[in-house]
Length: 173
Image 1 (cartoon, helix red, strand yellow):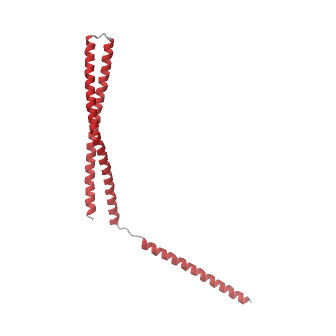
Image 2 (image 1 turned 90 degrees about the horizontal axis):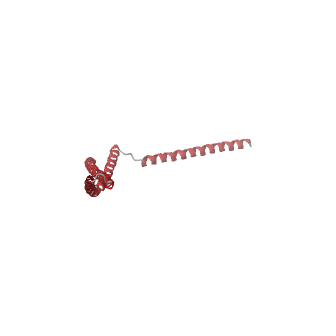
Image 3 (image 1 turned 90 degrees about the vertical axis):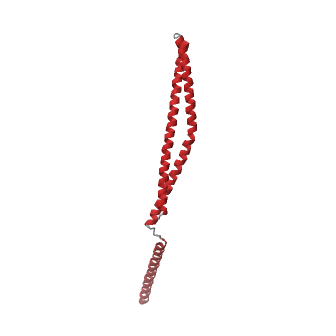
């Protein structure tokens, strides 16, 4: 009987080894299949493709910046009539205030001891001063707006030439 148990034990050991070998073989086969399928599905991207994509990205970035600058330019150019009107109105207000101040000063000159005339002359001088300052600021604002418009136009021209060169280089490939 002892030999039967030994034989059964040997058969059991042999089956265990066989099953283990089969499992290992299946795992190795599955890993091999996975490795082959990954290498088949992986695409190799050439340097030319990468450079082309970088060029396209740069073209898109320059185009985006160009569009943003054109929108900003349109916005600034739409402000020019308002600022011009502001300059004209503040200049007219300053002129009127200066005339009123001149009249008040002449009236005070006729009667320098009159407190009422002195107060009016002082107030009209303050108004003339404020209005002249507003007129100067309006002119400065208009000048600054025009400088910004010119600067933006130069930047737009630079972007357009850069975009043209990028698109020309991209189509040559």
